Length: 327
Image (cartoon, rainbow, N blue to C red):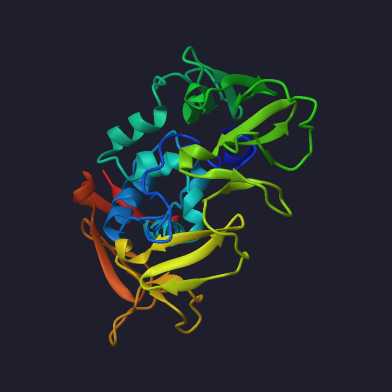
């Protein structure tokens, strides 16, 4: 079995912004003083997504986005999706990971119409990219589809630069120079940056956001909420109010079965939090294990279990990388 590279997502797949642009803004609210911007999935939905992501084999999804261990995937994804950062959570995982019901439906969704055998004869010695007949940017590794970006969906064209396929709006204009910080388009819809002579873009509206001028690293996608400091957090009932790219983000903790806590031990103030049981809780350092076809692990002080058969698998296996379902 050939190990898939875990360091190709940033440049080869997600252009200059480190975010997968691949779908809709599922999970984002309209954003107002009365309504949360984020309606995160509950732990059961995240478990099912991680069972598929860690166990379905070669998927056209950048490996660096997904921990190989089921328990680590659940912790990472759930923590990410209940934080202000979730407003720019990978649209590829949001659209395909959370909605798919089987390995085949997950692979079909992530392929974006590219043939499963499109990389036959390509990428034998390393990651290579090409533009297919539908204008999609395809990255290949050892004759398998490593990742796909559907350029036409973002009104972009596919180009190949130094063997790397990417989506672009064409050559960089004179006012967007190589090495400059990311900036906003005049419409405040796109995030723009010059990358190797090509204009790389990110459509903030695909996340339900707008492009906003920032400090330090430049512009970024943000909500239309009030301006805020990067470390500002508070609770408004069970809505956690945090900050991302200089604007407030409202997270509905209750939607994920959590509560907003002002402070508990080392937990951040104003964050979504899973209250541990009053007594008899588990330790997150406990090693996840297989119990026949069921994965048992500890999360937020509670022993949890996931039946691999619920995702169409026959069993559970333990490898050097961790525990996952198996066929």
